[in-house]
Image 1 (tube, helix red, strand yellow):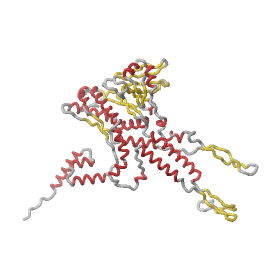
Image 2 (tube, one colour):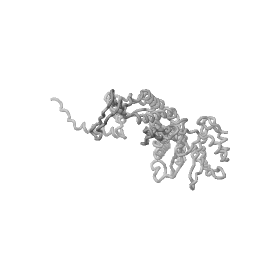
Image 3 (cartoon, helix red, strand yellow):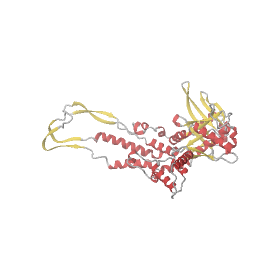
Image 4 (cartoon, rainbow, N blue to C red):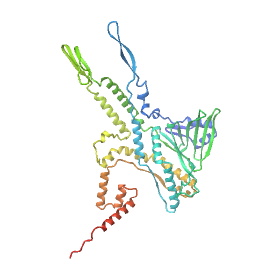
Length: 491
């Protein structure tokens, strides 16, 4: 029987293949190993947080309301009413996700290929086909969506498949006999899918299942797709049990899916602290509702009160009795311990998730921050992003490129020799820049003869075509030189 080891579902390939002919046993064995996704991953939106919707966690409060009716002794009578309390959730989880994804992928993913001697023609074509497929599927944008799904739900599945290419799609890249192109679909728990990766004892992925529900004729029908290296099978649950609905052969020489996963949601470690902040904010709002506005207290008897009926007049009171006085009773401010607790919690939440905590209030009035200061401000987030790019994130996108190379060799058999071409994903981390400082440094290097003008133009990024811009500058300089009068030799 398969066994679960953390996020890994361990099963030998021979056992998995033996179960393929018995849908009931297969589905039962695989679904029993569904990964545990915490409930809070589905409650990302602030209005779904515990502080907002859990009435047992934050119950309504009972208040005594005057009825306007006096009892036999002339005292006011009261009735009990239940009133809702303040519920103030935050979007901290979303901020943590946004920062993590943007730091990982805001610079896009470049295809870094090594064109080999002796294979230049096919390698160039393979690279062009990869770049066309990348652009056609908008993978720089899709990559961020996939990473966000993974960081919240701990899993996402990308499935590649071929579709007919429109006329002219491969013009200038592949021969006219290339009639298909590649498309991808993304599946995750956000849409009700449960993804179950299956590994052997060596932690090699030998398959992946997708469990989901579709509506057919107004009825919910349970299905499961089983992806293997040579085929994928769709199973459907009917009244008689589970059965094979479709068996599709994969011709790419590789499994047509890539699994993106991690052990825990990105913000899992700080969930208790986020909930505490939300609780404190809500409690503070309740307290402010009661005590934020001053209360007028009288010592002694009020004999008469006049005025106050119009906008610009004050009410006056006539007091009776020795020591009679009027004063406002108001809170002197929130307890310092509560302020300190919230500040410390917020700091810990961002520090422990390596999330930059930068607000408009913090940067107002600042200008020309040195580049090294910017780098230090983002250092924890940068280190975290580099670890991702050099780890699971990089490996996941390496699998995409390896798969797509095999797919290209099927779409266009002429590039088959280039399946072995070294290709890897190249990431870039985008940070805010002090452009004034950057420009000044480059100008200084050119002036000192340590950098060419052509390189400087490329560094300054004023144009998408630095070479053409440099030629234009040289041409303008030559024209300007013609206008300079020729010096007349001294007699």
